[in-house]
Amino acid sequence: MKSPVYLNALRAFEASARHGSFSGAAAELGVTPAAVGQLVRTLEEWLGVSLFNRATTGKARLVPTALASRALPDLRAGFDRLTIGLERLKDETANGLLTVTVSPAFAAKWLLPRIDRFQSRWPDIDVRLDTNLKLLDYVALGLDIGVRYGGGTWPGLVAEFLMDEEVYPVCSPTLAKARSLKTPADLGKQTLIHDQSVDPETGFETWASWLAKAGVSGVMPRKGLKINNSAAVLQAAIEGHGVALARSILAQDDIAAGRLIRLFPKINVQASLAYYVVYRSEASNLPRLTAFRDWLFAEATAQKKPG
Image (cartoon, rainbow, N blue to C red; front, side, top):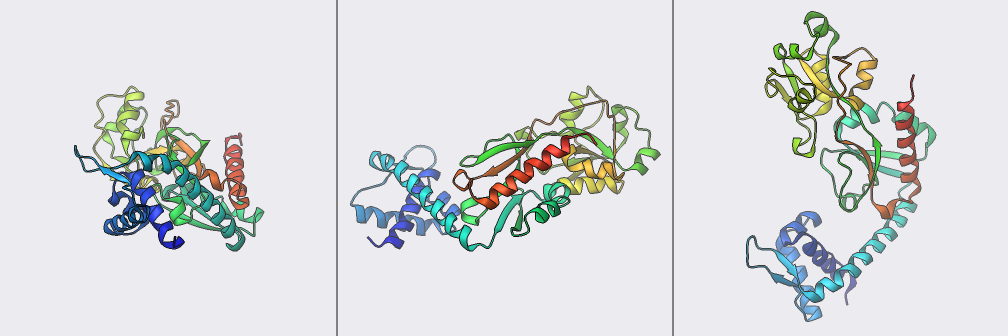
């Protein structure tokens, strides 16, 4: 067997089986569906067996044969071992490079204001920050660790709870002074700033859900300024463009600095989503990952302490 050719073919076969299509595998592997199909056919020809049945109902879907299904767990275990070996090689040659993925807002409002403390403690680790709202392919992009906001389950990844938060209205001190905002009912006269960075179907708190939990009626929760970046939502509020529904982890530094005012502090609404440290289990013992993971938890713990 020509190892490089058939390793690619095995990867194409495994990805096609997992996605149920050549197109899904192609998107993951960064090639065309035709190329994936050709690799799978090459593997079938070499083995002398068919690896897929094609479903005839609903959408066309690749269904592994019984023989292929029995082989897939061993193939996946083999790929995991290869990944571990590659990580060990990378760890020796990457000169302490740590690749971290977080959302743009979390980077701007929480991580970057604190990252100097990590770099001071671990000067030999170089941090490369990848800011993206979407969960990325850790293996394909060489990602070590990330912080994600959600329900705590991401297939193929370890997710450890880091922080939860409250959700509450905020505005600039100037707007708070100029407008009468004594009760939530007064929001009906204000421009509401909406955070559209996360799909509400995930449980992400919106103005509509916050108003309902606060027992407020008569406010039009869907009108106002809509922004798909949580940091920009807070910046719009700082600049006096309206009242934003803030996430406490992202807004805390702006509130402490006096750039924002928390409204109606007696109303407490806990967010149903939280922040999680996310990484691949096979990379959990990498020294640079362990150092950053432990630092994240230390920062989160320190943040909860009064004063």
